[in-house]
Length: 115
Image 1 (cartoon, rainbow, N blue to C red):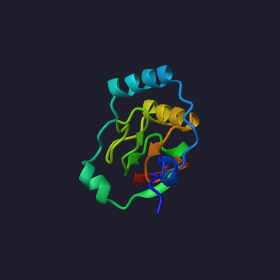
Image 2: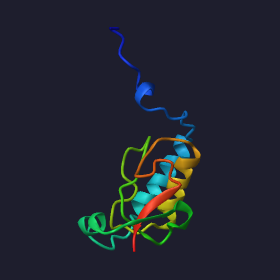
Image 3: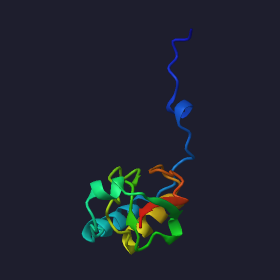
Image 4: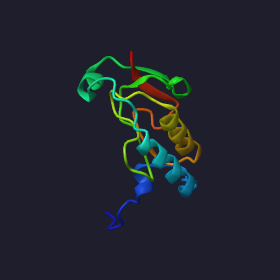
């Protein structure tokens, strides 16, 4: 057996993040100023029967999942909140920069929404 510890890349391989941290910070500030509208309780949305739709169609829909981009490390949208222009713009910028995203579909090709 080897004494060598496996690197993080052994468990999770993600292309390098190419984020412009200043522009992401500005977008995150706008999201914080205009928090997504809560349309239902997080519990109700989480246990509802969400369906996956393309991320490009998420604007105006109610989230059925938590989506947390990194380097921010703070959820941008929670279950029960409505996707607005600022949240979709921030998530699109994070996706484009190839930074890690914690979500059901970490590629953000689709998101889970409540009907």
